[in-house]
Amino acid sequence: MDAINGDFQEIGRKILHVLIGIFAILMVVYGVFTPLVIFVLMFVFILFSLFSLKYEIPVAHFFLSRFERDRERNQLPGKGFLFAILGVLLSIELFEYDIALASIIILTFADPISYFVGKHIGRTRHFLDGRKNIEGNIAGFIISSAFALFFVNPVLAIAGSLMAMLFEALIIEVQNIELDDNLIIPLAAGTTMFLIRAFIM
Image 1 (cartoon, one colour):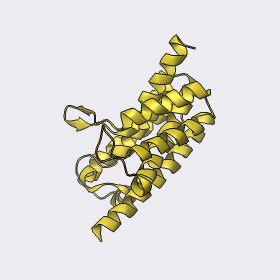
Image 2: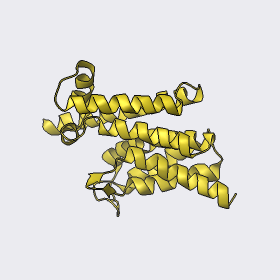
Image 3: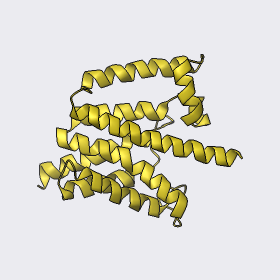
Image 4: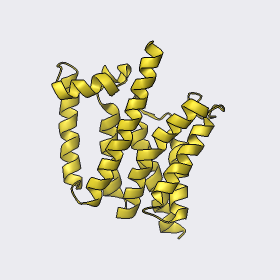
């Protein structure tokens, strides 16, 4: 029963991830999410997260109880969402507009597609992370590349998505804190696309 509840929770997390990603892209495209607005949102969310360690904040508690993994709820509530905000902010600040949007859309679709495909049809364990499947990574790469084409040319879309999925399979820690793939994916994708444009194209 716990495994079924865990599966439903993870499916809910991935659907919410896609919806928030699409919302973020629209807000950036229409000029609502400026770097200052995103920074303020991140600051407010950090406060909510810290207060949530001690108190049950009604709206925050509703989402955390339904979508947050237990281990993260006790460490830093909403860690995935916080890293996603940081990933969007850094993408906008570090990269050109089209690369930033491509990085955000890769973040939006790569991980959820990778999860769904890996969970349901994946058979081959990933050589970088035994918890994941190669089939999931390939699907995440293909779908995120297709969506990235809305913003950048095929070479950049494919390279950015490929690098994002390679880094998504790595477990990277800084000071014993495991970096969330919501931060790693857009930075890996954006940096790859930036370097290709700067030195090859």
